[in-house]
Length: 137
Length: 137
DNA sequence: TCCACAGGTTGAAATAATTACAAGTTTGAA
DNA sequence: TTCAAACTTGTAATTATTTCAACCTGTGGA
Image (tube, rainbow over all chains, first blue to last red; front, side):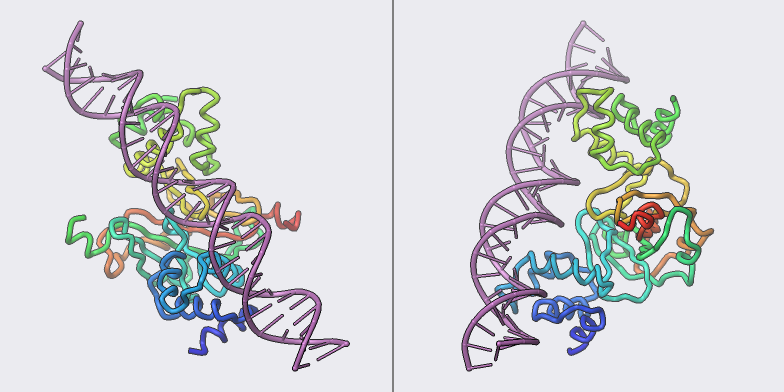
């Protein structure tokens, strides 16, 4: 469980109690949670936690490349603690986000025209998941 | 200028005045506008246009696959009338969205596990554009 | 050990995007 | 021409996110 702390330090982030809790949460739950989900879940063990802190911390983690911020869902940002390259699929019925393998080296590489620096890449799929398809939702 | 009407009909959408205007706007402007940009620009020639209509119409167009809804920007949805496959880059300084060629056949194809139907794919890059890099913003 | 201060956290209030909804308008088929 | 269904409008509500000022905490220096 010291992993979260190490991860933060490695990315130049001071490991406060709240930051470690949030980082730990993202390392344990690969559910691509939103700010609100993280906030509510952590509230159980940290009753004084503020939603603002969750926003601040995720913004901090993201800007230091310690987590990924997924914009696959136009309703809210989802966060992902897994930094190895992979794609995402979101079901438009149940809203669930599923990890997908990223096809080899397809995306990155040649710096496109007008672009000086590519910092992030997201490959996002959406459609209907198996479960929702069976329940014809 | 009849193209917009045809495009709507082809996608099973009744071509009302407002819908044609919005579709036409997206076919002319490849700037990936937001709801608000479209609303304000069209207001000049359609003073009674309602923002709600713009929301409704874009949602309708998108659900009929007549336009793409880009979730590259967590702040607001951007729309794109160009339906041929291509990727997008957003500059984190100026917010501009630039079209990029989509590397061959890289993304789609094999239906991933747990996924029944893939309806949309987005390949999103972000970083810093040339201009912002020079102005060290 | 004690103090001061920078860095963090908190909660309330403000903002901005989006949705809900009820009422008015338009359109097209009978 | 009439009527219902489809569409549009504007206001109000909702929801996510940001702002901000006050409070807390941990650390290094006196």
